Length: 443
Image 1: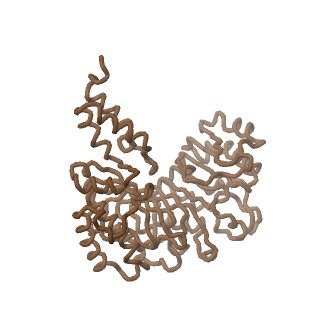
Image 2: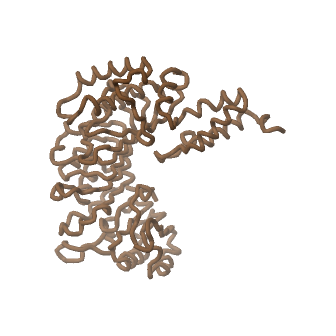
Image 3: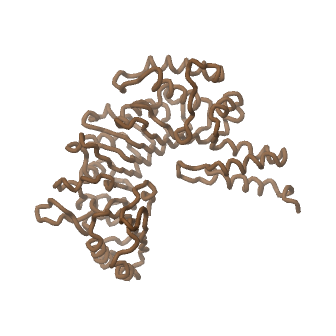
């Protein structure tokens, strides 16, 4: 039978196999140009295939000429309604200057002007510095583009300076479920109050990923944190949240089930940033039903210079009775060496691990003594059935390919019913992990 005579149901499955949205992939870096090319080629085979493939071609649009894509979406609403995801932060829309308005579809410019007036009328003065010729223009154009896509469910946004999502009316994005925001200003963090337009416009967001998010000493109080009533998954990468801000941050996410936090630490906030104990106490009080938690401070190179007891978890973490998955760097779950609790840590503080854990992922620090961690893991294997009865998998992520105790470590976990994996990332010869959010995959 000729391939063109395949049943339509089979052709549809073939076409959907090229689409990351149809496959349900979670990674933001999703659709390769080769996938789009394959779908586009199928559009040329026959009218029937064109009819089936065109909607999928626009599920996650990508283009080397974004302006052409913009004009296409503005001129053809029947195509725009197929767009499910948009990631302009990954491929740069490169808007033309506003004095070249002929480069824009007239309908888009009309919507831009309307949204600009709305932003001027509703923008709070304390949102931060905003330059009408750059910051607001970019975000209003983004808003005008998003307004063309009635079925949009996922978007990646590049924020400018301290602003994000200007020009959205309340509840204007009811279908949006997943948002990823990369902050474009290297000299400041994305302040929580700058997320209020997004929270108002898209009340049904379930997943929020923030890069360079910052809640400093000024971001204290409920008014500083807009409420996201339906967010269940919050990821904060390369971010900073001070100790007093953590309770208010968590109260803004009343349905939180998954939280990942990767700390960064500019020198000017060295005395203000929240430590592991601050996060632990805030989570225990405000998110006792949390199922997944990631706390990773391994990107802070000079944190060891601080003799503070609250930079590690303690037995309070075990109070999270419903926590099933934990990812953290080795020093957050280490035992203080000195009796006073100050200074270096080693091994694993078993008392800090919730008995409900099903998966544990430890990000091994480059300067953490591998023998201490190895011996602690061997000791944990002997106690795991009594202390962690539900544990199914434990994984260690490190830079070096192998340690002296690896064979003994594997032997200790054999027969426990728990799967042990030793993952290597980065540069093995240097023993340095490649710190990326790929290490935050839940065990």
